[in-house]
Length: 116
Image 1: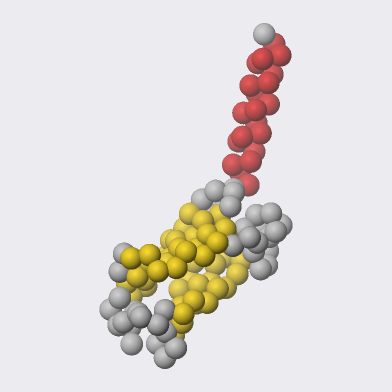
Image 2: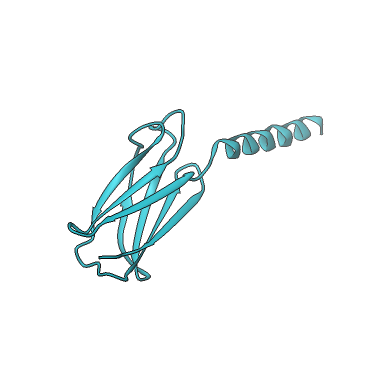
């Protein structure tokens, strides 16, 4: 019985510890170039090892419609990364929503309105 109790405690500790290192991006800053219609997504996500802990999914919606679903396999730097996406069909007044997901857990979204 003592062994079962110890096993449960160890499993609980491992689960809590792994969750402590999981976190979403701390900030997602969106910039839309009106001339080129290119969306810049600057993701702040501080990690110690960007090849093991990174933003693994970036989903972009325009007016509620999914237009880009980008899967990533690592992060450019330990501080985060900046991605650029062409949005040739975006018009002034369109609402652009970007959702980011950390491979260890957690999401953070950001939104802008296109203004030309």
